[in-house]
Image (cartoon, rainbow, N blue to C red):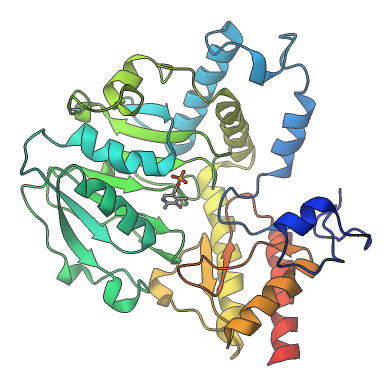
Amino acid sequence: MVQGRLAKKTKPLFYMEIYHENYEMNATHLQRCFNFSPGPATLPEAVLHRIQADFPVWQGQGASVMEVSHRSTAFMALAAKVEADCRRLLVIPEHYAVLFMPGGARGQFDAVPMNLLPATPNAVANYFAVGVWSQVAIEAARRHAQVHIVASGEDSDYSEIPDPASWSFAEQGGYCFFVDNETIDGVAFQTPPSVPEDMPLVTDMSSSLFSKPIDIERYGVIVACAQKNLGISGITLAIVRQDLLDKARPYTPDVLNYTKMAAQQSMLNTPPTFPWYVTGLVFEWLLAEGGLARIAEHNQAKAAQLYAVLDDLDFYRCPVQPAHRSLMNVVFYCPSPELDAQLVAFAAERGCLNIKGHARKGGLRLSLYNAMPKAGVATMVEVLRTFAQQYG
Ligand SMILES: *Cc1c(COP(=O)(O)O)cnc(C)c1O
């Protein structure tokens, strides 16, 4: 299937009318387009074809992967392989547990304080407030503990990571939490923050894990939902340093309890087997692509190309400070909201879909996860240039 080409204009399809109200009704996308969605996000085409080939019979099991027991030999082997590939890609040492959890990243916003903080009324946790997802995490943490804000980007409308000189920690805090890449605001930590010694660093890497090599030993806990860079929605990765297990508060639901999930190889209840399988295929794809160092080079190049065009042309405005820009989510504005909306339609007609910004921010957002091909970025660059020429 040719990527990025539009099918011949045909009469509107039922699903188009419902889901694609932003687009011209005469532009149908019957062929695969470049999908800049922030999540659920584009998957590698090779993975999609592999899924297709695994239907309706998977690995000689006489049934598809969706229909076999999670305790079957075949599925248990799959789970072991997914964990091994995950450890290999991220270089995860033995003293970390790799858990596959339900409940998405938001579930982890409650799981983290429930699992890590003592059950005392005055427990404190440190949080960076650097964007929308930080705020959501902070609201969740306040259900369980006092939250100390280490630094807030609110004054700059989350266009930068506050200067380390301004950070302050509650030294008695149980851990320090930060969102590595703010998917909605397009702002990202370039290196993990330095925190007081012995304070576990906890991070939500939903939109950046597997986009670059990281030093796992800097972290106590890393969480990431799958539907950005590691598969489809329904499964959430939690990498937990072993010494942080056995601390969960008694009211913690079993399925969010790191200790209990670790003891049951993430199969305490029926796990999301199909998303687990898809994550396994994405890991195999990442390994075949040469691993995270190679992927990081591609990601650098893709983002640099887009920021260069946006900065070069007088027409567009990127609100995020260059030193703190996300490589995964490029946030920008046209000169007016009307032009923003026109660009969404203009890009869609040229095979570039889902570039509208989040409702909280307006404007536009290009999500460039691992699976976004170079050709998608090249097409988008052309779209941005042509649009600025026509409307500038
Ligand atoms: C997408 C996202 C979330 C929310 O994930 P859910 O699986 O929908 O709960 C949280 N944090 C970040 C950084 C995200 O990108």
